[in-house]
Amino acid sequence: MKQKNSISSRSSRSAEFPATMPMGEFLFEYLYRRGVRHSFGVPGDFALPTFAWLEKSRIESITMTHEPGAGFAADAYSRMNGIGLVCVTYCVGGLNVLNPIAGAYAEKSPVVVVSGAPGVKDREKDPLLHHKVKTFETQRRVYDEVTVASTVLLDEERAAGEIVRCVEACLRHKRPVYIEVPHDMVDRMIPTRHVPPIEKPHSDPNTLAAAMNETLGLIRHAKKPVILAGVELHRYGYTDLAVKLAERLNIPIAADLLSKSAVAENHPLYLGVYGGAMSSDSAVRQYVETADCVLMLGTFITDMNMGIYTAKLDRNRTILATTEAVKVRYHHYDDVTFGDYLAKLAAAKLSKKKFKHPRPHIEPVPLKKSELTDGLNMKEVMRIISLHLDDNCCVVSDVGDAIFGAVGIRTSRRAEFIAPAYYLSMGFAVPGGIGVAKANPNLRPIVIVGDGAFQMTGTELSTAVRLGLKPIVLILNNEGYGTMRKIRDGSFNVISQWNYGKICELVGGGESTVATTKGELDGAIRSAMGSTSVRVIDVRIPRNDMSPQLASMSAELARLRGAKK
Ligand SMILES: Cc1ncc(C[n+]2csc(CCOP(=O)(O)OP(=O)(O)O)c2C)c(N)n1
Ligand SMILES: [Mg+2]
Image (cartoon, rainbow, N blue to C red):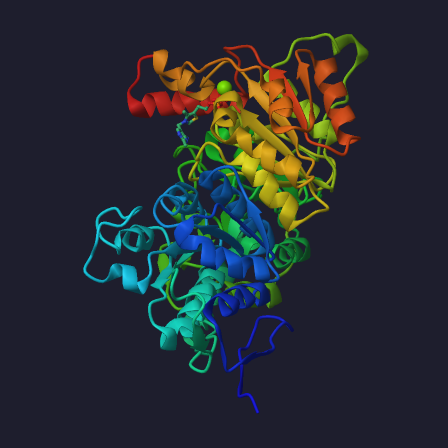
C-alpha cells in the first residue's frame, strides 16, 4: 500500500499527498491547494519542463507579452485573491519581473515567483551558460532583497519542505517568495514526508494585555476618536471586523490612498481619503488632524500615504497596529499579532462615542445638459468616472495623475480600487486589470492610465483580448509625463504622441473612442459599460491641467527637491 502524508491547510482543501511525487506536480498541486488558480508568465528553455508541469496542473497558465506585465498582473491578482503566481525563465525573465516583485514586497502583495533555472549538471565546473550573469546564485541573491523566503530546489530530500516553507511564508507575511527550479530536477520524484507543520504566530498574553490596557485607556478618554483603515485590513481579511468595531463605538473611519475602497464610500461613518495635503477634501483632513485619538489599523506610514509628510499626526494621540508592530503613543509592544490585537479590541467593553459627520456622503453630481460640450479636466474626468462605477467595478489606477486624481473618485456604491500607491511603479494598471479580472471574473476592471504609463505595458491589451476579458481602459492623454512636468520640466518629459485607438487593430480586438468633452467621455463610458469587449478611451486632457491633489503634491515635491518653479 502507498504511504500517505497529510499537509494541514488553511481550508478544507487539505488532503493527503502520495508519499513521493514528481517535484513539478507537488509544487503546483501545493500552490493550488493554498489558493493559486492562475499563473502569469513567459516561458524559456530552462523553464520549459516546469511549464510542462504547470500545464498539467489545475492552475491556468497565462502567457503575457512581457515579464513586467506578468509581474504586475500577478501582483494585482494576489491582492485580490490572497496569493498569486508568476512563472518565468532564468535571469532574462526573472530579472525582467524583478521590479513588479519589488513593488509587491513594498506594498505587501503575496506573489510566489517560480523561475526555471540551469540544471544541477549544468552547474558543475561553473561554465559560461546562456542567461547566467555572474554566478549561478546571482538571481537568487538578487531576489533575497525583494522576498521573505527563497529556495533553489537542488535537493530532492528537502524539496517538498522548502516549497511548503516558502509558500507558507508568502501567505503569512503577505510578501513575495522565490522558488528556483533547476530544469533537471523538476521531473524527479521527491518525498513529501518531511513537510514541516504550519506554525501559527501567537501573541505573548502579558504583552497583549498591556497593549490593550493602554489602547482602551486612550479610546475611553477620547472625545473625538477616528479610525484610519489601512491596507492590511483588506489584505488579511479584517475589514469587516474593523467596520463592526467602528459601528459599535460610533467612531468615523477614513481610508488612505493604498486602502481606498476598503470601506464602502457611502457608509455613514466613512469620512473619505486622508493623506495630509493629499486628502480627498479639507473636511477629512481637518477631522483627522483634530481628533484626540487616531486609531491606525493596518496602515502603512509612507510618504505618499501621508501626503509627502504633510500629514499632522502627533504620536501622543496615535495608535498604530499592523502586522509588524503595535505602537500605542510612545510605547512599542513586541510579540502582539495584528489578528489577536484586533480580536481583543473588537470584543472590548467600550461605550459609544458622539459623532456628527462633518460632510455626509456627497454623491457625484450628474452632468447637466449645459456642460456636455465643455472640455475635460482631471477633476471632471474623476467626477464622470465616479458617476458610472458600481459594485461590479474595480478601478485599477496607474502612476501619474491617474493615482492622485483617483483620490477624488467618490462612488455611490462600493467599487473596488487598487493601485501601486506606495512603490509607484508605472506600467501597473493595464496588466493589473488582467490580474483583477482573473482573480474575480465578476469585477470589471476600470483601468485609469496616463499616456506615458500606457506606452510601457499597454501591449498587454493583447493578452486581455486573447483571454476574452473586457477592461475599460481610460488613457489620460496629456501629451507626456505630466506629473514630472509639474515637479521639474525639461525635454526628458516628452514622449511620442501615439494614435492610441489603433491598439485595438494591432491586438485584434476591442473598440476605441476619443473623448474631448464631458459629454463624449460620459457617452463613451456608458457605451463601454454595456459592451462585452475591451474598450479603449483616449481621454484628451489639456497639457497643463492637473488634479487638485497633484497640484498640492507637486508643490510639496518641488519644494522638497529644491526645484525652482
Ligand atoms: C517605472 C517607472 N519609471 C519612471 C517613473 C517616474 N515617473 C513618475 S510619474 C511619471 C510620468 C507619468 O506619465 P504619464 O503616465 O503620462 O502620467 P501623467 O503624469 O502625465 O499623468 C514618471 C516618468 C515611475 N514612477 N515608474
Ligand atoms: Mg501623461
